[in-house]
Image 1 (cartoon, rainbow, N blue to C red):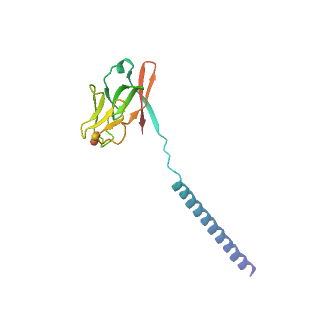
Image 2: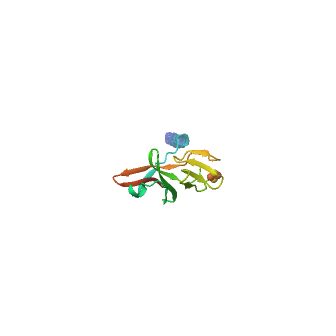
Image 3: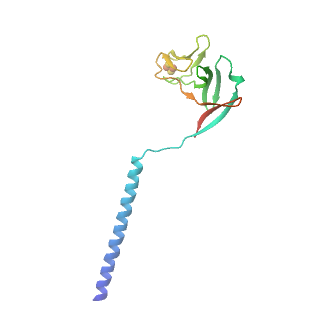
Length: 148
Ligand code: FES
């Protein structure tokens, strides 16, 4: 009699213990997933500095077109120094060109106009041209681009 009762109570105890452990594990995983859902996904962005030329290469009044890491860029001296503008129009993404006589970026698609600092001043573009950070080290000019 005592052996059977001991077996049953041990079986009940083990069953209850495993159920409690399973439930605890399940609730823990659910809580962890919920916290992942609530917290924003933060991806660390990496930038790379790419040598694009020397100060002498960029010292003229005209814009210097380049393609860096798949992005079409225009270098230009602005009121605040050398800048690297994306040529992608902020309206629908056509390529802007530089009109030296007017000192403006012109988009041929819908006549969007930007001033020499990249500010949208006429037409449909909703915001200024995007810029890439420019770094000068000695006589060399670098542009910072995102790498995947
Ligand atoms: S795409 Fe440039 S103005 Fe529309």
